[in-house]
Length: 180
Length: 361
Image 1 (cartoon, chains in turn orange, purple):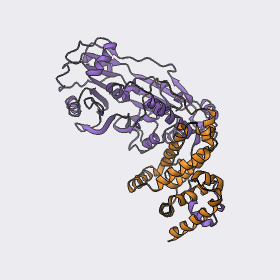
Image 2: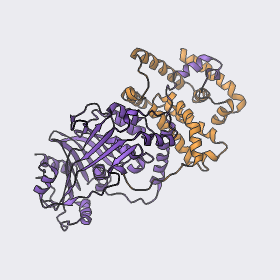
Image 3: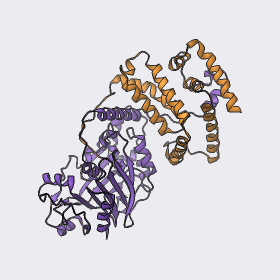
């Protein structure tokens, strides 16, 4: 509310950063939304990932290994969010309840029974992801975010040739827990 | 787009799809927010930033009443007015409905490490979306008046003065000033707003045609400011020494509740539209959405380093502030009978409350 006359320092406002941000933001946000279920938390975490990126020296967008770094940071943020402690999950649930009715303007109203059912299913998926080994959930989340085997390998420091096998193993593990 | 063929078993992809958002995030908004965050980091990291005095910061929350509206970013206007107007308070004129009047407060914490200016950095100004009257910033200054009676006359109600003050300050006000009433009208101009949004490539933002010409009037009534100088210093006689008195004296501010009137547009439409614009930090938007009664709740921004909590002054809703660094400076803001009162100075919490309580009698 306070308006001060101090100059606004424009950093990270170069076209390079902007195009880099525009190219990746939606997918990073969507990945983090899947693990948090909260638009606000997803945005906060995504902003933090890009903030870290902007602080890197040399700047991330001029670095050829940049995408791998970004996805590594994004998957770390996602895994931390998944493994967040009980208190954090309570806070998320509360935030969801409070912001729920208004959280997405234009989001269509839905039947409360359907909404409850959907939330229960979502919770089951997140529980399964949480119970898996971190690398296994990261493999599934990154692959689901649309990354190629090579990109997944780059992000998680794996041999590209082993990614297919590892994803297959993660899928099996997920199904065991999810259907258990 | 993730597709289920990413996995050998399509059911795995389908299960993960359950978690996917039905919405697409607002990238322009996110980019502005990211720039603000980066600017914050830069400013916070700057060495030897002089720490602003408590009174500067404590009064900063009130500064909006004294500032010319054209200088205020859209978020500031949003904070006061455009949150969630659900219940018009009363009809002021035939077309104008009073949509906001202070009855209660909500504390809006500004994240640690950010000054308020950088918190809102990157937000478009209200004038981007229409015309502001007066269009040029007006310099509104407190004018000294002869006595309390003259000040009461100027503000339109009988000023309350404390019967209890710490013995470090004089028992009578050393300066009595009145800031004249101000009124600013914002008129929405469709063409201007469209041009701005097009410059952002925001062709997706829907601009309801009925907004064209709709207006908001911000009214800030005349404000009295009483300064009780420390006993050891000379009575402050001009504005320069007024600032010195601010640093160690007790300052009392009284004004009728500011209000906002609207014409030609429904609150819901306006709120929906404004909250859809890029640039509003999500935490601020969330606070605005959660205000219990937005037509009468004044959001009070509280920067890091100051603690704030809701309390009461003789039953009236109040917010009490303390400087976490010195722990000897404090302030309070309350509303009673349609009047907004503020007290600040080198006071601890119980002294602040004692001064306020003695005024409310």
